[in-house]
Image (cartoon, rainbow, N blue to C red):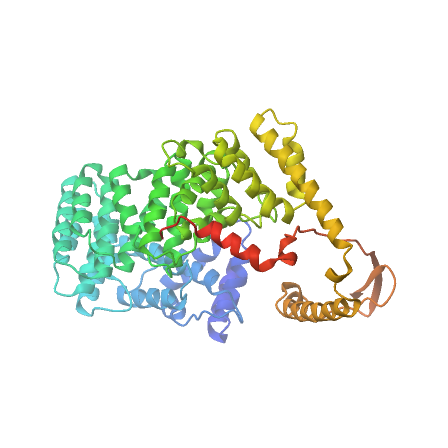
Amino acid sequence: MDDLKEKIIKATKDGTFFELIGEEYYQDHKNDKLLPSILSKLHNEGIFDLVQIFRSLENSQERHDFFSVRQIFGDILPKINAPVKSVADSVKHLTLEAGIDGAAYWILGPFQEFCKKDSKRPKQLLDISLTDIDENFDHLSVALISGAQLNESLYAKKAIDLVTHSNELVRQRATFALGRIQYIDQILAKDAVLTIKQASKNNSSDLLLATSMNALFSLVLQEPSLECHFVEVLEDQKDFFGERYVHTSAEILFREGGKITEGVESYLLDICCHTKPENKDTIDKIDYALARLVKSGKFDTCVSFLEKFFSKSSYEAPVKHFDSFIREIHQHKETYLSSLVTRWLLSKNVKLGKYCTHLLKGSDEGICLSFDKTYLTNQEKGVYLFLARKACGWFFVQPKTAISLIESLLDDAPDEELKDIQHLVFNPLLISYPGSIYKHLEGLRISKNAKALRLAEDVLVQFGSYQKALKAASGIHELRPSEQDRHTYWKHHQRIMDASMKQARSKSIFSSLFFGNESVLLYGNKFIHYIHHGDEKNRQEIPLQELSHSVEIASMHNLDPHSLENMIRQFRVEGCHS
């Protein structure tokens, strides 16, 4: 211990203090807090002033890890004796120096512990924060929160009085503190709620209203009987949708989870509907909250929210932003996912139809899915054909999904619609995907469903006739391009592919990993590389392995791309009113 003391004292003189304590911090394997104990003792004995030393700590990785060294200061802070003003300035410096890091405000906890060690410290800090109001840092709430842990009545009442202060920054910080005080006296908690409630009626500041919402909800968690006042504030501000206010609603939904009653949850979701598409952080919070709601069986609530949110944002926010929600409904493919796809395709809204394709992205061929038949009762005539065309239009590039959705309609579809659905399966699906669609129809030939069996038989017979006609046409010399034309086309195609490959390589993650270096294989069937050990190097040979991936491309894209695109576009937009 004495050796360490001497090393620390020497380090303070030669300018290597932070490097030394950083190294000692990592070497303290026993976790016996020896270093903080020695540092606090040396400070209290007047050997050096730790508060001033740490005031010079900078967020630099060149010689020491800033956050580790700062944590040492947090460990010793409750144990040292120092003027409140000096400590407050150092805490401010160390917090702001941390930047936007999530751990930036961690040191406020030890600072509160420092203030609690002496009943005079919260009072001194409160006087400092009110005498010279710092726009860049909040010492006021620390003073009120730590003071309330020593004298709840005195400091809670001070905070209540400051909620009506002439300075908006003081009002905001006092409101924040009221939400962080842990109340023993429930009368004080109610007084705090009523004060914030009254003050919020006259406020138009986004930050202040967001702080009020957060503080009120924290108080409601402590005393649920106060929820009615929180709801009244939400009702009073029903036409206010500032970005901070909306974000706070999303944070409460995300953070508090099952602690929220259904009434409050409904209000908060209504507020979150007004999130701007560019506020990705807010949307992420909402996304996590929706995933939790789905797990708790509130799928319909989530769908209603999403439809309202997309409508208010003019469908500028893509549904893929809600990836946690999407992953959760994929866990319930036959219920939630099926229901959502059916609902949005029946909505006759092109944007929601497009969102359906995003819901099912993840594989080249798509996934097997069925329509939710509960949505098909009491629908207008032609709904089965309507859904079949939507499935073909929106999921044409995912033939597995398209044919499985259409198959789910066959059992209940009326005979007059089955004929048109059969034509749809043949053209464009089967003639575009003679591999996967043909295989699926072959499987239906052993189906117990009479309608599905008949459709598969008829379509396969039709496809046989189609192939015979193609073979007959292929023998007509005038319909075939000349060898020169084919050669010219493939040269043009090769140039396009080369340019595309060059562009892909420039953005490749592998190129960045290997600093843009590429290896060209001149001959052989092995990859050779060298491992260097000092001046020696060892040669290693790795056999080359074959990698392959197949994607089924619609053949009609080559035969008649323009007619195909027009047909798919018609399927997507027909019958839609928005």
